[in-house]
Length: 111
Image 1 (tube, helix red, strand yellow):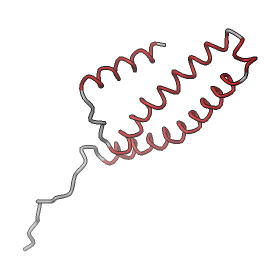
Image 2 (cartoon, helix red, strand yellow; image 1 turned 90 degrees about the horizontal axis):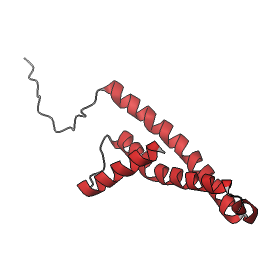
Image 3 (cartoon, one colour; image 1 turned 120 degrees about the horizontal axis):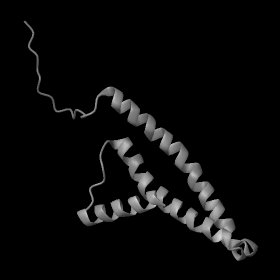
């Protein structure tokens, strides 16, 4: 007669295997797409800010502002998505910072 030991110290995930595989795929997709995005954003900002002829033209200021917003969004919000898909845990932050982050995220999405 065999006895089954149901007591285990292993941490069981709250997600099933399909959800874990889906999140793992999303993690790698975000990771592979965010790196070229950051490089391209920094490259464009570098040339727009250091080239005097490009800084003189007014329509380039809109592009500079949008690139700065994109850089801020990529470094904050997308990084949090990548962390969540990798570890299945959110950052533990204080409620005030969570409200500010939610407000900034909402404002960036409306732009």
